[in-house]
Length: 287
Image (cartoon, rainbow, N blue to C red; front, side):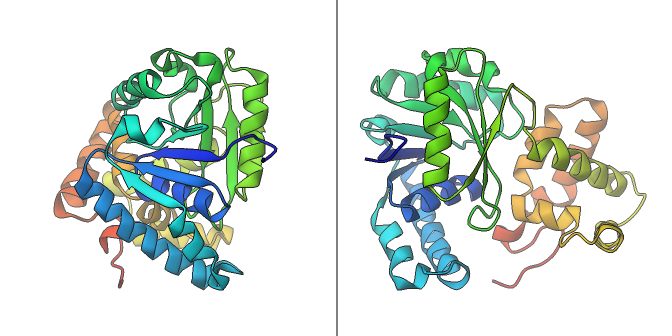
């Protein structure tokens, strides 16, 4: 038995970060069920998991000694939500960054999951208190936020609400440690947690500079890397994140943000330039 008491983990959503959360959990020894809304998406997720196994073998010490394959063996996928959460100790939601989708998802999960289950959202910008009532069990609900490329940038920000049971909070902190993360307990709700409170303003400023014609994305990246010594510029980061998430965040903002979102959609998303995983975003990638 782990310190957290968590054995079975269900991850809702198999996009960029959802698939990483599922694979890392399985790599750490948990039994993992990955859920998404269709069998077609689940089939694509299986290929994504296989690619992650290869990445781990190339970049994670020890993964070549059977660890990556063992992770695949502990991973199953399903498009049946009731089946996905039937025996879950912990459900981590990583669905698109829209409050209506998240609330609807949690309403359904709350109906299907057993009483023992802890609920966690990986929302990047929404506060857990904006979602908690949809779960039907706010005392067992909190936020658990990961950084992209989870095997390298292994922070896990844990943020509850005023209603979160402190014992549940402590169990999720323990789980984050057990899955190989560095837990970052956040003492009260903060939109964007720590990481995105620092990162999102940078990415927003970069997109505003490009969308309104002040400078090209590559030149903005060059300035940031050269001027700060950072390994990646903001548009390189956006390509890693994938352009759908920043688009959804921008669309929830004001008039200026919606204009930037329209630029992003017209020049990149509508042309299939979705970021690193699609082979092209602000830059082209050879897969």
